[in-house]
Amino acid sequence: MKKLVLAMFLAVGVGYLFVGQPQGGAHVFANEQKPEVGYQAPHFTLTGLNNQVYRVEGKRDKPVIVNFWASWCGPCKMEAPDLQKIFEKYGKEVDLYGVNVTSNDNPETAMEFVQTYKLTFPIPMDVTGAVSDRYKVMAFPTTYLIDQQGVVRKKIIGMIDAATLEKELKTMLAE
Image (cartoon, rainbow, N blue to C red; front, top):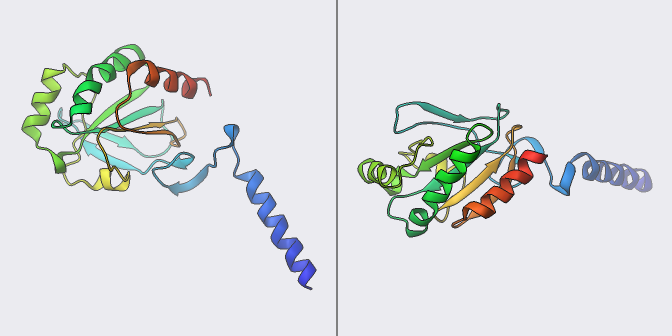
């Protein structure tokens, strides 16, 4: 009896290893939302500075870059022009949401930041901090690359330059 239970346990374990392995070896847990590579990105709906509603909630028409930032953040200031360049170059292929963590900022300085850096991509406002909490944002900026299936493909803590982000984006678009 012990051998039968052990054999069944091993079969389930080995089956799990193979079923949970998509291309590239990353686990994909289709129904589990977690801000980690291989998991469904946590769903959210936020209103932007332009009063439009922006969502991340599973499958989508195109991948999305979600960048969490605050106007007082030095690295965010250095990164902003590169994000704008990426948006201008890839905006038809990828959505880019610059989520202002308004719970650690304020709408007026966020608007000044957007105007100063001439940002034209959507700026959803995380007024309560609930979305940044769900994404476990511990530092600004933090960026997530999320594929068309809604799966987190890359998590970048800290500033990323345009060339590196473009390389990561091209890899995701090629999959």
